[in-house]
Image (cartoon, helix red, strand yellow):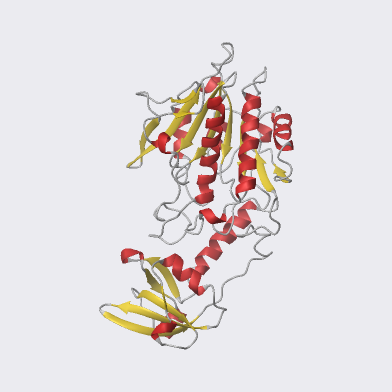
Length: 406
């Protein structure tokens, strides 16, 4: 999901990113873009991008010329070079939740629907350049591959992989009077895993459904909220809550099935306000503030240097007092006061350094083996203070759920 202050992993399906369709039965997810391929390419601000678009044609002659869109963005923050608030530049931003989770949900739904097509046609879109400011969905809505006036709804999966305590947010309910009944039915069968549902009427927001809402298409937005790893290199696969993620994808699939089957198409209505969880803006700001503070625990801003090794990009007073200088490359770290070689642990990148530093309490002594120009030095310093989470990691969407769903 794009940050409110700015303008998400590649699809893992091997067949999709080549030229072959996903085939799971009597029908196929077929190409929809020009030239009989999956890629809708576009250029913006000097860069080249491409949405990935496929379709499963409807089976009802009277409804197959109406379209339901299920979408997710597949880009993320790369190596931290995209403008906006995020982790250290030069570090891989994995994007397991943002938005490999939503991408996986779309691919799974495509397989299911391809195996058993529905009365209306279903268009599956993986958007590029969402993190740059919804560029992919904006381009699609300006240059649609099926008529917008026959696009009856858009369902967006963005960050559905970190559901804690059975939480899920669904926005956009005010964009059609049909949504409440359809959504309630879809969530009912997933109540064991998604038992804490927050709903909102707002149809806009910092994700790709916003583009469809602004061309008068009813939208729904599935989202399990931001967390401490949002737009950071730490958004990795082992932290995904897979069972509730699958439940969210199944609920979205049930919504699509209803949309592709019901007789009257859902009416579009205007809905005021951003469709976001309560307290979202404050939580997002706290996450970025904490992420910034975490990079400064050793007395300066840490970035990825040559070969990814952590390097001090600038020095704060605490770092200067310890004897650190801008450009110092950190090679290894030792906790405590020992400078013996066996006390040091090598760090190969910023993330490994962060993990080692977080093992220490504020004020605890640390030894840093650094490279400065052509010299190797050992610098004695201490672990700096970092703001704590206001309500604890679980309440603020931390790394682990308090109760694992069964």
